[in-house]
Image (cartoon, rainbow, N blue to C red; front, side, top):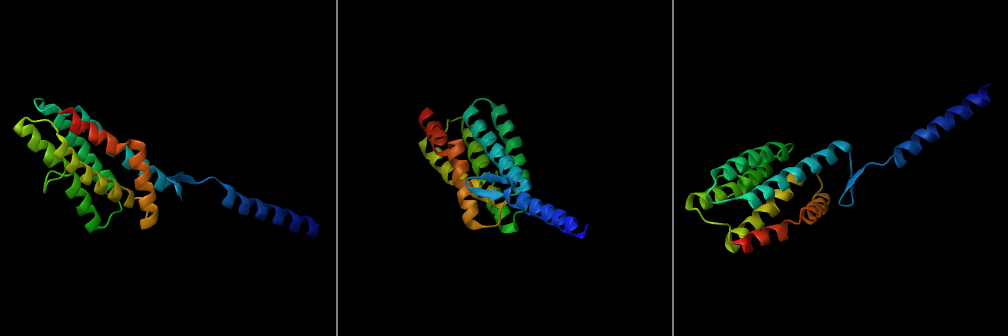
Length: 171
């Protein structure tokens, strides 16, 4: 009786250990993470994609395109800024916001002047989106190396460089 108990206990422990190490955890950009972190990365990716889609839909004569972008930028700041330090949050807000030459400020100025997004503006947006992606990923992971891998994967998945380049060519 005691022998079968110890055998059963050792089998249960072996199964628990195997489940812990073999249970597939979420992975993004080659980085294994918890489900909560994975959902945050996916949410951040979706918010960034929405802002880029808004840029693509931007029309200098249609104020609705900027209004939609404001909503998406606010959502991006709120959701992608979770778990960031004050300094990191400020970087994110400055890169995407309507102050200090952020993405929204750039587009509002373009709409006010009724001009399209040219190559110079697209180049400025490119540097802003690098910061946006990096800081958005930092809200999910703590490690700089993990954040860099995930940010690189998001930039590839969303084709940020080529999409911004196409915006600059369109005008």
